[in-house]
Length: 394
Image (cartoon, rainbow, N blue to C red):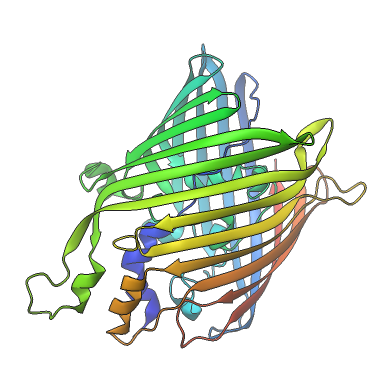
């Protein structure tokens, strides 16, 4: 059976990104700040069970930050548009996670190729703030210093660049409370369980469940190098398919029944091994994550991520970004058993990706990446891809 249509009902809700990594602290000047970005991608499959034609995609990102509209108040907006030949993943080539996150979103989770995220933040004092609105979760992942590169270049494979946990859709509507009592940062997010796109979403807010997502981050310095160590616990009240019910006869009343609640717990870290004494958040280091899903109805048992990267250590190239990372997703044993009954053999999905993105000028960046992915389905060969991207930001 074609895998992409088979996977969409489950996986579209799981184009996820982990909120367990701390956001980079970026000072904002008062007044409006507008940026415009245009990125083009060329991804070339070199092996695997897919067409070997190159995939060309492009996207536009327009971001607005308006700080101090009132005392402590600010607004952030992000308009996205992407178009092109598409992507490998969501069943294509036997892969679950797409090999180019930025060619996938927002079009794959909406009725068109555009979306607008808009949030309002109120800073009450030096330690406490509240944000409310529609969040772009990929932006949250990109804002992290090492893994995400603070938006200055990063990994394209979604399973590495925006690690999935199946409780955090790519766009969420809700609120976020942040409390910063050094050395601890506490974050609580409460949001609708569904992806925040499409007219039907806005008509049915919170009808299918709510997610409570909390993170505690310990900030430290080892030999003067910044480090972030986090614990993330999330619970969704949304119902999910009970995989054990798929083993029952279709005539059984319990066939295709559901279970209440989807759970995830994870620990993560980002630790600098070298940083610029004048700018501690510029440097390179190691990062990692271990996550645990409940396995039913969360399709994840465990996930693992380990990598190294950051700013280039080459003299005079500190504006460049680089990274090398490995990830592995151990899918639910119960899900695997259920799919096996229908002739679909599920295995763990592993990947390795390396990238380098050079700052040509203040406004132009050129990057390349290479990845290897062991597909989630045994009948597919290992997939490899070489990619290039060029980005202009004004």
